[in-house]
Length: 514
Image (cartoon, rainbow, N blue to C red; front, side, top):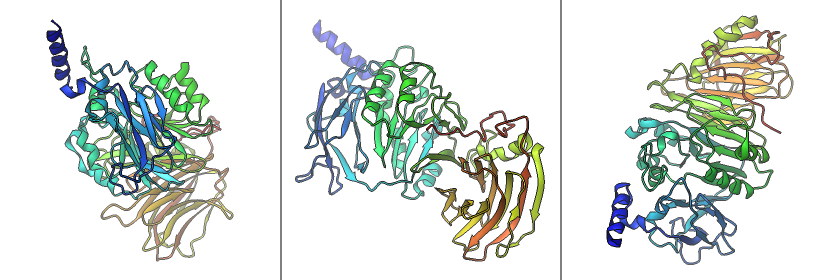
């Protein structure tokens, strides 16, 4: 009878995708976190352990000792009933970066006493840039090399990609990217049958993509991802998050990744967001770019990924995080955009808000930039459309405001620098001009560049004063320029100009918490 029972359990596990080896997963995992001097991912003689590094099983944490050694007893996770489907991973600290695997599925560990994590030294400083995408769904099953090609061409300071779920893709996709690709689980990434297999609803995820809960530090910023996949905050997740955040100081800046954008307003989860310095939340699920957060913390969602792709870009500086959008062609071709894509919003904004508040219009003839006089403004709000041929200039763009430190939007050949926020930006094949559309009003700046970049940014600017186009070096010329003063709306005290396309999120980037 006992033999039949064992065979029955084994058969059920095999049907759920577990191998015979995975059924007997270790109860305790031990090893070392070490500085990989030669970068081969293997602990070699003479390589030193790293003390004070946290290791987690998604339920609890342990910290490495002076020699980098750790030992963790695997806790029970109700969302992953089969221990073999659970994971153990390293939470690497600032100044380090993983070499090879940073997590292991327990059922695939061959030697539970030698689960080592290799880290290398990594120079990290502010500012740096990372990307955020979400809701790929089945599109990624085709590989879609256009998106990977776009990401892989990014400069080295674009450090990693955070994906906030509904990925539904094979493990091989991550191998297409030349930088860390780290994901949070979405509602379509779980086992959706009425009776989930013994490994639990997350078993498929840990089989392919990694831990359902993870954290790491980069340049002093704490990044953490959790499994919020519905209108609830699972107790196991909240307990793990509280343990994770308790390991960082109350002054540490935190970026949280999750799938479901409803943060809620009560309970322990909400208290954690308030008690710790959660500066930004990345979410998905609703298939639209926008800002919200329910008054708890600023939260940005991303337009759902369709080939070749749209994604967010985040610039982390010493005092803020600015988020913009790249659209590689959300309707499968560059320059063709869905109605819900931020690149398609210019005309909607004009029709829905700004146009009804136009003041004086200044039109400037095409010609060389040299000797061009600034446009003087009486109204604090300004809408600018300019087409500039940089023609070898090292920097070219728009300045808003008089005095020694005007607000500046500058193109440098491979980047856009927008009031100090520097993001990768290059012309597409065949493009020779910089097309800028800029709206500045009440300490808010909105910029569209060519046919694939968009950003909203809070700025320190009470009034515009004047607008000038500039170029440094080369023989840059202006192909067209219009400067439109925009009257304040007396019926709208916040002077926000709402998009008429039904989303109501444009030009309302939330003020970061103190």
